[in-house]
Image (cartoon, rainbow, N blue to C red):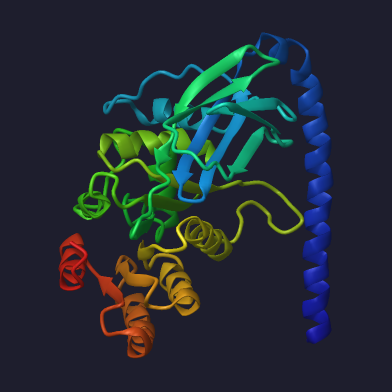
Length: 353
């Protein structure tokens, strides 16, 4: 039996590596097909997804790709129009190894985009600045990008899940999730009643930084930002995932690893701040947040709020786990709630609202 399990694991690894070879060959063909005419006609831009200033410095993350002109969505757009617009987010013309110059203050820092066009910059900038200039010197592109946040000390930081926490996704039903994702647009997506206003109140006009974490791919970053803007959610950092085939994954990275890395990253930026973690029980937010509490302690993680969306069985499972957690860290540290009103009551009890 053990030998069969080992053989199956090896088979899966071989299949994945075989798929990687096929993907590489298709990538070469695609690159050759798009190298001459499309790339010569394309107008590359630096699409910046994160431009964050924190007490330790500055973080930039974005992608160099061909400029795309998309029609603005309408609430009455039919499913086919929405599907075509959504599909266009996946068919991007990326520019690997592009030279990206970032001017901050009197300094210019140069980075290169990776094979998928993504670029990233961590800098220990020791001055307070409002914006940076992001340029592609080889392509005649330049844009000013405003920074979110400041170098000032922050005593509280909010980290929130997105899917089924802030925005109704229906992730507990594959059919509902696919219909919502593929055939809706940024004007038709439903928001969870009250949770957005709760996050806004916790943010206190930018006094308490907010970070949004989702397992959705970076291809949907601007789509998601439009939804946040419509909902008047606070500007905040965004943690999404890079979908694709790798030796470690078929399509999507581990939800647990992605969300925990996001928490640890933000915690490194705000070493003296305390945290409120908000999520739901459709995936593994309760377990991930409990593990973060175990690592950082109740003096760092002040409150965990979990929205119950998966039914009685899962809710009872989380309650049982959090009963054990609260016995160790405090009776109101980790909580499960059915509504934003229940979350608000919990936060008021802890003096956070």
